[in-house]
Length: 502
Image (cartoon, rainbow, N blue to C red; front, side, top):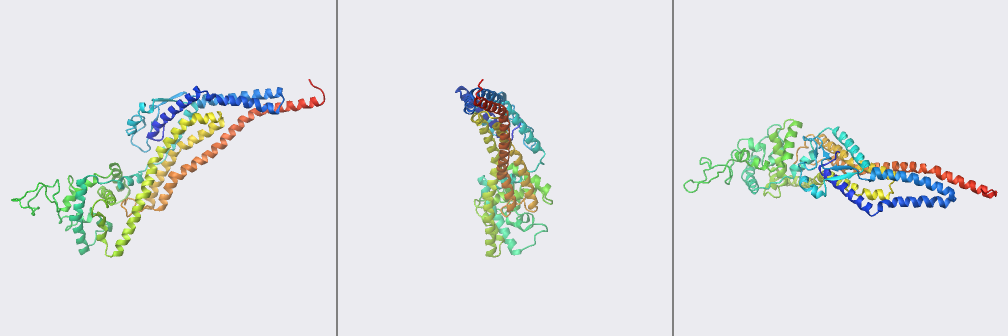
């Protein structure tokens, strides 16, 4: 039987274990028999209020036979635990994932270490036949629909992973600040003095961060300026580091040029910063971007990811928050850019994290709701007096909750395509200068939040109608006995009125 998430593997077993335990408690206390007692009292009392004794007995017997058969059917099919379900019986296949189906205990997630059979209370639960069939059918339908949805890279999750990466290594933070002071500031000052033309096709925003492609590759900039500190990994070179007198002091590390300091494959600052970007997000980004946007290389994709991370570190890395000041010629330009940055930052720090957390939390919430649904089913069955109509309603509600997985898969697909369709030239600019259009945020928010609620309400309403029709159909089975009793009573009254009592 298939489930919709890794967590659901474990909450399904635990939920049905709770069902079994609650069912046992209700059985041992005798509460499960109360609906039968209530049915007998009702079927005895109601006919005797409106009919003669002989006809009331016939009506009561007929109604009791029908209600007993219906209630026992519900108990046997939908209430009595019967089919074993364990972690080995459940599987989850991640849509568009490279791996095949996994079962509980070997998902490769941290859930495996926490939700052990000991922690769950047992490895095997028992599920009534009806609910096992509903779950199996629902899981099959969901999987078939999800597999029909084309696979896409989750851009929102990738964006969140890159923007929420942080430079945690003190040495890298220290070098970033010094690189800014010793390399970027002198290069920007020279650029403002000379105002050279940028190469064709190069965006003007390139020179607004420390890893500027123009400063790295253009003669007279990073190849000319040098580090003002000793940088680990760059040996002392007496021909280059002429500020040191070997007769007085010979340093272990030297002061490389800014270009070497940034680009070195083993000890460069670029590599150190790149190592702090969330690995999965970076791998997806540098694979997706060159394939979807012409003219962008993997190196440029990596630079965009590093820049997005540094944008979020501006407040922590001294000096980096002043980068844009060097590209402004007027105070008005500074103010305008600062206002735009503040707005983008507010957007980034409020909506994007919330939306990403909704996407991440959605399957967790679904798994928890399903767990409580299974656990509380004994009470629903008891309080409904084992009504077939209620079973149908609950089955449709269960299907609706499980179907949320399909709705979220559609939402992911739509969100990714809207991002690239409405921002074809800027969706990959994850630094704070890029703001996602409100229409994308609105649509995605609707799909992840309001659409499941609407879907649940729609099927809940449909379930009420279907359940009501089933209940009415059962009631109609009792109608002939009621009508027969009423006709018998009326005939008896007519006969008694003529003085012909038999």
